[in-house]
Length: 249
Picture 1 (cartoon, rainbow, N blue to C red):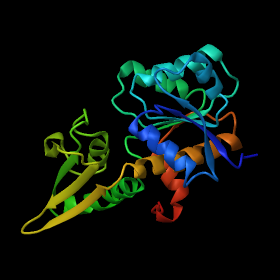
Picture 2 (tube, rainbow, N blue to C red; picture 1 turned 30 degrees about the vertical axis):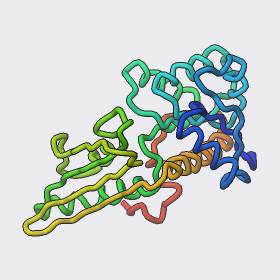
Picture 3 (cartoon, rainbow, N blue to C red; picture 1 turned 60 degrees about the vertical axis):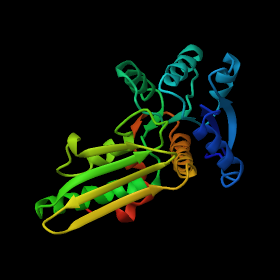
């Protein structure tokens, strides 16, 4: 039976995304979820152990935080492992192996961007870009983020590029300026015309909101099938949440 209020432990609770998650859970999501254990880099071992009783962990820490998650689960060997949402990117080969190992124990979903608009844009590109390519349009991707962002291109840009026919690495242009939350623009250049698809992130809350919606979805799946495990993607979430938008095959 599904718990009416999901227990969510936030890994990276002191970061910008961690604080945004807590704020939303205490406000907009307070009837559907509550923060179980806020985890940060200085959290004592007993808090990591307590967090194992959560329905789902949402990880927006640094990539190295994944090692701490895996260590807590392996050391305590709980019979029921919380589902896991991973919002960090840039994992090395060893950390990616840890993700695969965790996915053998529970449901794990990793995404570079939890924006609902980006998800729908990616699905739009999968459908539209082959048609534009066949009509002779050439794609270009321009992504802009704040000065503090370390990776370039962004994980979101790479995800959008992978969904775009005719896109190559040299066609991705990254800009780091000011405090821009995140802008992504696909420009398709034709003969005397352009087609533009653009997404502007106006607030960081939209990423936290998407992560929470996904966390509630994966928590419910875990509750319905406690022994289920595997690596999920936002495509799985899309196909269940927006089945009416999925083209029939």
